[in-house]
Structures are given as structure tokens and as C-alpha cells.
Amino acid sequence: MNTSLVNQSIPVPTPYYLLDEAAIVANMQVIARLCELSGAKALLALKCFATWGVFEAMQPYLHGTTSSSLNEVRLGFETFGKGKDDTNNKETHAYSVAYSADEIPEVLKYADKIIFNSLSQLNAFKEQVAAQNTPVGLRLNPNTSNSSFIIADPARPFSRLGESDKDKISEVLSDITGVMIHNNCENDSFEAFSESLADIEARFGDILQQLDWVSLGGGIHFIAPDYPLEQLAARLREFGETYGVQVYLEPGEASIHGAGTLVTTVLDVMTNEKNLAVVDSSIEAHMLDLLIYRESAPISAINHQVVSIAALAVSPIDNDPADNGSRDDNSADNTIIYGRSCLAGDIFGEYALADTLKVGDQVAFANAAGYTMVKKNWFNGVNMPAIVIRRLDGSIDIQREFDYSEYKASLS
Image 1 (tube, rainbow, N blue to C red):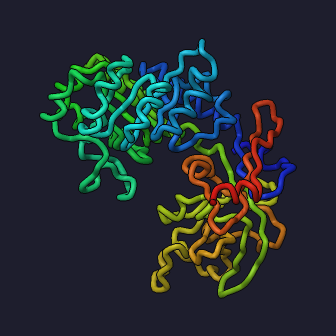
Image 2: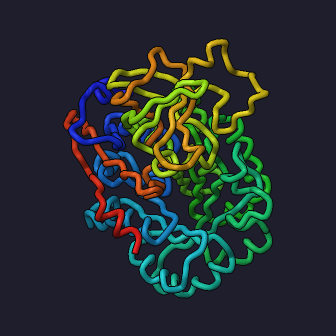
């Protein structure tokens, strides 16, 4: 965390997302190092992070973008790829769980590679794609994964995410040049990744030998300080050389980890057995993954002063009064921070704070870049957070503010 980032007063009302380009570039340098050692290419996963106002700082370190929809592939092309500068060599990969027929012509305008999720989609559109000479990929699902969350597990029962029948995949090898395998989610274990890759090699190695490229997707938390980056690089290089393929990675969270906060202001304080505070933001509207994954947000700053306060292990998001497992003797002094929406479970977390929060205090929540800004919404008509960027030179850009007209326009 850049202390000058949180100690600096920002001339925009809360709530706002605050992105730190220096922190992003620090992540970029790790990714570039991994690519240098391994020979892999790295594509920004726009499904995780698509705030194009910082793409200029990311562009020197990445090889392009990968997408999950027509809108994302167009955004990647226009803001990161050839649409921005016809002379650059950035790649724009297109993937979707399902394309509609009318989307294909436009996708092909932007894509350097198009990846189909299923054999039926591949067969439906392969002739149209072949006419444009665009390389084609297929999503391969190995039916195994490294995911702690069933909602995010591509190998969950009855998964629609990719094909796993080796015989059927073999029948279309003449129609594809590569495969995409995305079966990691917040996986911080090199050993687990390597074992999973070995399993894929054992079952699909003869298919991999016939390809030009393999994308291993994202969800590998190699950005962690203690992650054995050199071992990962060696494993990726060995994989690429064994099968004669260009390896791609699709870092999302790894690209922007620790680089974003959501800054809020306390609007009200109450007491109901514990201290309660209501801020001018909402997890359902502005940090939706907290609700989806039943997690809490760490606090990174209070009143512009750097702190590091994790939410307690037992959170009121899933409170069981009979379970006192992680509560301490002073739990009545803890503070629960709520969002301002009408959802009863709109809870950022429960915290043991040195001082009781007061109306007007500013609270900044960490981990507010990946899978947050791409999911923000207008639930309850709560004010949409502005987007603020602290540039590499220390200057502050108010990248975007939102108002009532945009709330109204989002409806009908």
C-alpha cells in the first residue's frame, strides 16, 4: 500500500474508487518477469478489470487483452490493442460462453484469436471465421480445478464451461490452432498448479502436441511475495517446449492486486449490542463479490491514515450466535460497518478498531479493483463511486464521476 496514496486528500465527494498506478506497475513488473523467464505471454483479463484509464501504464508490460463478451473484446481492441495504435503488436483474444450469430461479424473485426466454448458453437461458426483467416481456439475443461468456491468452479458438476471429451476434441483439431484451459481460482499453491497441469498433460498430451498455442487462463496468485515465481516460470517453459506451443496466461486479479481502494464516509453510527456504522457505499452496489462469496473487506485507511485491519473471522454476514469460535472477550466493543442500501446483509465486515467511528470519518476498504468496478450497479439508486487515479508522477486524475442522469439513463 502506497502511504502517500491514502494520506492525500482527494477533491471529490465519497464514495470513490482510488487506483494507484505505482501499485499496478509493481504487479506488472512481476508479470513481465514471469513472461521473460518462461516465454509465456500475458493478457489482461477484462472480466476482472477493465478500467481503461490506467491501461497506458499497463500496456508496456502485457501482450494484450482477453475478453468474455463482444463489448469486452471491442474495449480491449480500442483501448489496449490495435484500435488505439495501428503500429502496436498487442493481441486481442475473444472468448464467450456463448456467441449469438449476429455478434460474430463484429467480434471478428476486433479479434486476433477467437475461442469457442463448445463444439456446437465451433461447428456453427467455423466457416465464417475461416473466411476471415482468424485463428480459432476451443475451451478445454479438464474436469478438475483449483477453486475453493463452487460458484466459481469451472469443474463443478454439469459444468457448461468447455469441452472435456477427448475423442470429440480430437475430431476438430483441424479446425482449431489452440485451446484455453481456465481451471484455477485464487490458487496460491505452485504445487497444486503443477500437479493439475501434470494431470492435464497425462490425459490430453497428444492433443496438446498438435496445437500452436495453449492459454492456461488466470486465477494463479503468483503475485504473492512468497510465491516461487522462478519455479512457476520453469514449469511453464518446460510445458511450452514439451508440446511446442506458445503459452498464454490471463492475469486478472494478479494485475491489480493491492492497487485499489473504495473510499467511503461514515453517515451514521448506532448501537445494537455492538457499535454499528453506516457508510455512503454498499457492498451489493460497489463490492458485489463480498456478497456473492460471503466475505468481508479489509480496512486499509481511516481518515487518510494507513491501517491494516482485517475483518474478524466470524462475520455477521453468516452469524451463528452459538458459535463463539473467533470472538474475543471484548467483542461487544467491535464495530460492524454497514452499507447504506436497504439490504439487511449489506455488511462490509466486523472489526476490532482502536477508536469508535464517528459521523464524517472516512474509511477506505482494500481489494477494490478486481471484480468490483466491473460489477458496480445502481441498486437502490445509491450514488455510483467516482473513479480516481493516482498517476505515476503523484498527480490525481478524477477519471469519471457519475450523476442522476446516468442513473436514469440506465433504466427506461
